[in-house]
Figure 1 (tube, rainbow, N blue to C red):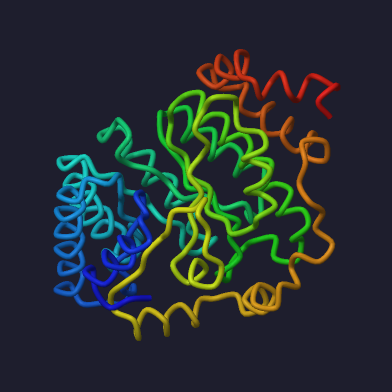
Figure 2: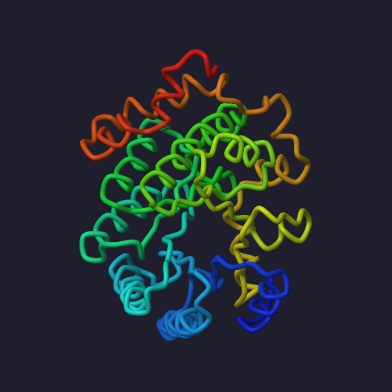
Length: 311
């Protein structure tokens, strides 16, 4: 984590990254003045990103903008409105698992006003109710939105903490679906992962003569495992209170499994063959949405997963 916007830009520019996303980190228990200062900082950040003109964007944590849902929505919308005026993409970040429905409903409500490619939503594979999460992804896709897809597993809450083999398969399967939707419909979804096996899966199955989906990794992960294939999520701001709050709400079990790499034990390499049932489960749900059904009927994804010769 860096201290300032300037440091972030210097780091990104030195590595010739072009579609980075920036988060001004703070914490949720602040004064009204501090919440307003966060809004001002984001607006200034957006202004600079407009000048840089590199296809960069910002990540916004809904809970960072107030002590009540009304204040959070009001301040968030203020930043989103500014992003749209500058044509800078912004994404509503995922926070606690128990607040995912609140984040989705806020996003869908804002999307009615702010149509177009500006506003995206972060969704995670470690949802306690997988079918409900497929529906959430489908809702965003059907309303013309875009998604940053993450595996999750950072925070406390209702989540399938112990089933990482299953979560990893679901993450890879949905990543495939989002990749095809992104390149075939020019939607701009993003996959946040440092799992080289998932990245290889997506590269190996990208539709011919098409650019692949954007892979995003965090600044901390990139420093440990640099990748030419990935863009970077940058963080700067109020370090100490942010870290203290993160430790308070973190899932210590998942943190241990992540740091020690134990949660990858027994997780097979994802392939088209072993993801068939998971992808088909996603496709069946999405076919209930007219626009997604029309896309799937003409998609190469449908041909792959109905053609046994590819498996």
